[in-house]
Length: 79
Image (cartoon, rainbow, N blue to C red; front, side, top):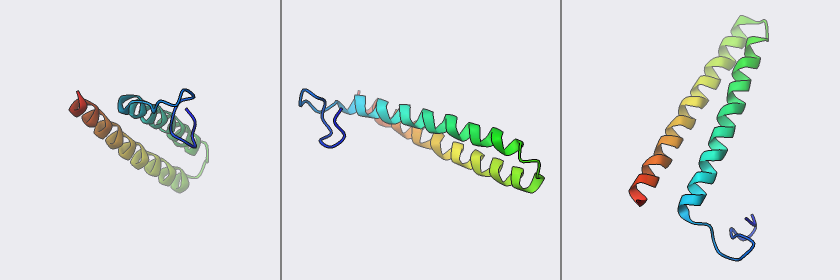
């Protein structure tokens, strides 16, 4: 996909389903990065900071799951 024109190299725009899948892949990557943040917070050795970062990571994960669920709903409606 060419990021400047939102088309593939052949000039055909990707289907909506393909674009939704791409977004879901990005969300999965962000969730993995967020999990790394959560685990790294454990190594801070400062309880208040650890708790704050882990609470933040949990909230981020919750929001990412909501976005994923909404994308699944959209995909189902398109069928």
